[in-house]
Length: 307
Image (cartoon, rainbow, N blue to C red; front, side, top):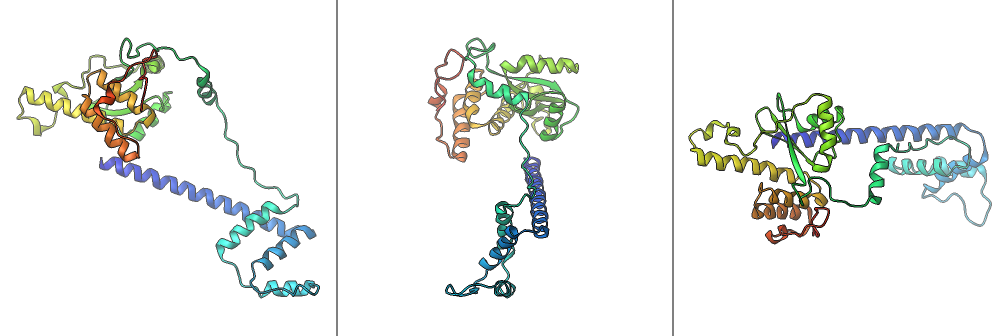
């Protein structure tokens, strides 16, 4: 848990550093445009510069009854109080955007639309049909267990999944249920694509692995437990993995996942409702009760109501 907190703090720090670098680039671009505009001849930009400086001064330039001379305007601008850095930066952005000259302004880079984005957008028009392995005839979500040499950080492990061609948005959870074993949670409709990638790199799947087995309890502090106590402890440890996984699944999918966990007997209704309730209260969403786990399935194998 401590490593996950440190990892989250590190990711936040990296995002702040990237945002700071982007802001510095924008500031340098604005300053370059200002210097370019000041060097260009023409009454339009010059009048904007003089008017922007004189508008920031609290000292009146001249009375409204008489004409204003150029020397008076320049003198008033020279003795006007200097604006703050924030005001100067804001006025410089307005000056660059409103100047009618032909100066080149840096255009915002357009987001590149990939085939993945198009396919995701096209799914809204697809007719819903019961996928193979839906709760009508089997589980809707499954764990695939793979051999693993060492326990890397989850962020590093997900980077490796992306490098071999797996879509991380399809992998709902990654955890280590036992030594040298890693578990991937995914929707059964994605099983074919997942196995295709694994076969491409000859990655074996641990078909006979049981996450609730007492063989997974290797902690020396449980060495004095009898077989029944070890079985109970193995179930508690695996159920803790499942409850922790629910916290990383978005709210729209979480209730469907926890319902499927209950259907497969991995969690009881009380555990599911308690986990959903605590997560929903932390996110400001109405909590669920154990009765919410009794949901009627639609033809697509999904709960008729997720609220």
